[in-house]
Image (cartoon, rainbow over all chains, first blue to last red; front, side, top):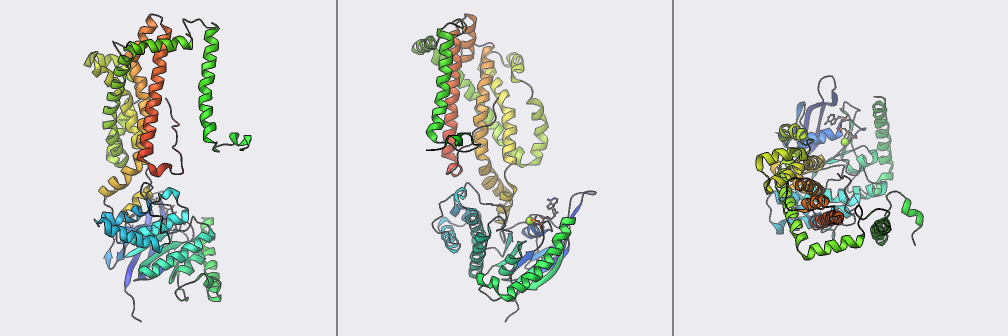
Length: 262
Length: 275
Ligand SMILES: Nc1ncnc2c1ncn2[C@@H]1O[C@H](COP(=O)(O)OP(=O)(O)OP(=O)(O)O)[C@@H](O)[C@H]1O
Ligand SMILES: [Mg+2]
């Protein structure tokens, strides 16, 4: 098998928030890589700087030192080549589902016909065919996040950044959303960097799981998930899965205790 | 059949016809108390005319065209002053809510002026502009403009940062963010601000018309007072109330038409603020 190229490189990135006397070190010399087409999950306790990393890659926040590189080019500002799905619901409430998905395409100057075709394709992919004319207000949380994923994918980014997109959903919905996401990923072959504090989610989705330390965030461990593709929910009960889960739970517990005592 | 106790559970919706009946009931009670106090002459008619006398007076004034003349002038003044204020306040408020340089420049000064009562400026305006229409409109402008600007600024500031960030990650430029996110996101709040401040504009109108005016509802009320035509005062006040209600309904219709995405399944929030 050919070695996949490095898509994203985080090179010694640190981030300090606040002014002297009141500083918070969110990230401390963090380095890691994401390969082309890879699904990487980042697992870390609350407040360890997971969102900060994604925001730096998206170009929404700058680093204090170090740099993030996409395809070898240093990231200096936001752009359509890095799509992001947020934990909070970020559909534009005044646009219909379809208009939301077409938002980025319209900015690119794509004609209506072409936009519409792409939007409907992704709507189908996430299982929301027939909802194109609904307003976000009338959708459930899970549906909103699916549309947000479709919107990001429709824009055809180089990498998709996902910041605990299922964090606000109940366990059942969450589990189904994971499968829908994997399905969409298989089809689109995107590189995905997915942040979560849910151990099971990190293993089930990822090719690689990075575990972060409590604040200041640093990488603590890298794990390659030895599960085949496509993943099915039954795998969550396989001995291998449970073994990794046990290890990661112990690791993350250690860090969470530090957070609580901080 | 809904349980009676549900009517007294906080924030629980009640049936539409019960809601409407309650609104009508208040008017009926009001009318009953008024009738009771006036027809029995518990309060003398010089102070509290009877409902039918007020109605007859209104009818007479309508027929001889007097009332329409006053209403016409008042409406034109309010609308003119309010429109001029809004045309400047809305863009300025949006800029202040979006760009910190604008906020830093204008906010302290507007915050300073807005506590000065518009009525206190009437002598100045008379001195500067004279007693014409310009002076009345200036009072209304002065009374509404500064509040409007600050309220629009607040609405714009409250646009969710996540919405702005997600637009950037979809390839938006700063200009795009302004046009395609901040503007549409703050529009409902702006229309609401206009609806609320339009009510305030009426208050300033009456103040402006009470001083040095020869026509208008405020003048009419003032004249009636001078000749102890209490029923005319009542006609004036009720007409102002009706006009306010009509404008409120118009604003709510605009809101409904303009923002279908807000009330499919939800209801329009009513204004909590009043003056
Ligand atoms: N704009 C900011 N200003 C100051 N401090 C910040 C800012 N953003 C984040 N922080 C701090 O940096 C640390 C890391 O924040 P971040 O949001 O990246 O954590 P997280 O891992 O995403 O947490 P969570 O699991 O709660 O989402 C936190 O302690 C947070 O308080
Ligand atoms: Mg976070």
